[in-house]
Length: 166
Image (cartoon, rainbow, N blue to C red):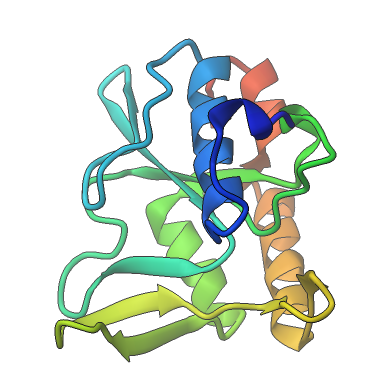
């Protein structure tokens, strides 16, 4: 995955996620600009998609999580040394995505710096080891694979091959 072509700073902790979003859009022949916070990342055939990676904010407490999107493209850990289609990424409905995160114990409530209550995906990244860690990460992978086995999710590369059909 060539993230260097986007010139994100090494100090930008979200650079891999931003590059993943842009590469997804380029692969799908869309404008590769990163969507503004709170805006749908992609839209095609009247379907809205949110592109998520790792951990982070899902929405305000009391609002619908991943608001405005019916589907989520989710990559728990981006591997910059692998091509886009080799990433361990999944496509699933918003409701299945929230259920997977909840069952993995990764949803948490947090107060932002401006005092807003938010729902976020708890981080499972170990900065010292520069790798994912913990039981919750492995539970997340287990839940994602179970969703695939139950036909509630699809690996991203397979989804691309199926012409965006979930």
